[in-house]
Amino acid sequence: MSRIEMHPSRWGNPAGATDLPASTRGLVDFAFGARDTPARDDVELPASRLAAEHLAALAALLGEEHVIVADDVRRIRTRGKSTPDLLRAREGDLSDAPDAVLRPADHDQVAAVLDYAAEHHLAVVPFGGGTAVTGGLAAARDGFAAVLSLDLCRMQALREVDTVSMTAVLEPGLRGPEAEALLAEHGLMLGHYPQSFEYATIGGFAATRSSGQSSAGYGRFDAMVVGLTVATPCGTLELGTSPANAAGPDLRQLFLGSEGAFGVITAVRVRVKRLPEVKVYEAWQWDSFAAGSEAMRRLAQDGLLPTVIRLSDENETALNLASQSDVGGESSGGCLMIVGHEGTPAQVDVRRRLVTEALTGLGGTALGEERGAAWAEGRFHAPYLRDSLLDVGVLVETLETATFWADREELYARVSEALTTTLGEKALVLCHISHVYETGCSLYFTVAAPQAEDPLAQWLEAKAAASQAMVDAGATITHHHAVGTDHKPWFGQEIGPIGASILRAVKADLDPSGILNPGVMIP
Image 1 (cartoon, rainbow, N blue to C red):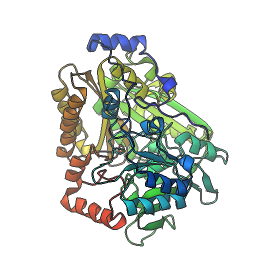
Image 2 (tube, rainbow, N blue to C red):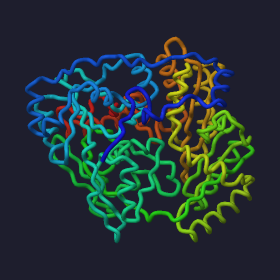
Image 3 (cartoon, rainbow, N blue to C red):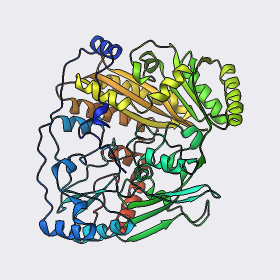
């Protein structure tokens, strides 16, 4: 399949970069005072450290054309797409560039690479779409002869479709749109749409416990997984022989969320759905974030969740952030909720009627389909806006967490206070509830502030304060962005010393040489 590679120091398609809309630029000038901060494009990469004998041996395993040391390929496999990643790249710091990019064709070639890497102490970083936002692609280099980016882009097959059991087996290198297109040929879908959908891959979804914007209707990605094939330095695991079992701990859970530290996922069996015949997205208005949150809780606990539901707080609503084409434009006021229904005409009609009755009874005001359609059209565009804001001297980043309903207000207040305290009075802190469950919800924060002289240090201080606020409030350090390197200190607090010891023991058993994504995830 022909693919567009992401820009090395920006998000997504290089052709997708645009100037700020007039409404947004006006807001930026008023709130922050814009100043141009262009990215450097003239930076040379560190020379590859991969010795000639290793280059030749790996080429013999994969084919010469699939072991690449060219700078242009290594450059776009350097780190992920967090704001710290982009700030480093924009300043010319590409010190985490891999020494080579390897492109295996199948499970056996992956296994062969791991065998060779373990024997010769070469670090291996599994690479899917490069959309990581928590430092999960910046492996520790010390003690390794070289760092190899194991790019799974050649593993793009839909291996199997079972329309009786409603499962499919997908290879890890398929991007979200590619997987959906292959399934659509059979009248099927996954329904997994994170903001990174256009570039993230099936393997990455599994390795990071991804959660998509339609999780209320279709579930998180880890809930979609019924089986895995994993290559480790110690051998191959085939996991998931039935829809459910009581055969000891579920070993699939060791690899879902493991971020390539325990093994390389080479196939994923997922449950699939029939393609929806109807999709309807609409907007609702609430007097306050608390009122809208309470309505979401009631829907979840009464079994009335739609396919999509998200709620912006007052600040996010005031900036019209749910409409990426008109950020800073006219707002509906109050708090904006997006509700989406998908399915057959009969299913959508019944569910929409029940949800409408419930939301109306709880105090919501229906705003119609126009704003809902605007959200759906721009649902994957926010990272492009971040790049445009970085260009004019605005620090922008996101962070997320999750907690139980009873603790939502305290968590919201603590994280908001931590961010405003560290970033100053000009900082804008926005939030929306992105995912809901019977017992709780995820809070997704977006932060904008004038860039300081050292914007990287500025953000790291704010991120540390917000992360500690999450843990102190009893919440998780991440709901769907994963641990990477950025969240490790707080992940260690979250699971405690015994939990960390368990993970280290698994790592030592599966990867005794420590070659798999060293320094990532494990406290």
